Amino acid sequence: MKIYKINVNGKSYEVEVESIEETKPEKPVLKKEPVHDMHADIKSKVLAPMQGKIISLKIEVGSTVKKGDVLMILEAMKLENDILCPVDGYVRKLLVKENDQVEINQLMLIIG
Image (cartoon, rainbow, N blue to C red; front, side, top):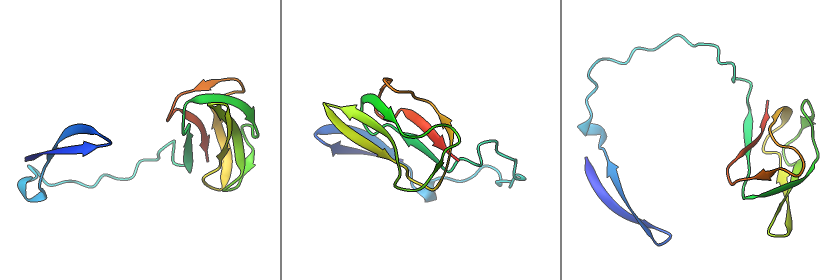
């Protein structure tokens, strides 16, 4: 393994990088039979792009949505930001309500 020092946005980080040639599997990797994943019908998770307050919901659980539809409006620093749908589908789970405060990268809804 090699250790590198990198700078990102003025912050310094040390990272370890492992070469593929350096790793040797101890035993062969066995392929498992596919298991039904209860989350397989999740097409997309919508995360909060920034910290703010949900001021308006434009959808509810079960709503059919298309890519580009406005799902909700998030107020941050006195600006209203449209949260757009990333894929076609339906609202499978809604995890926020109007007037909720959200943190950056907080899961807000799941599209199936």
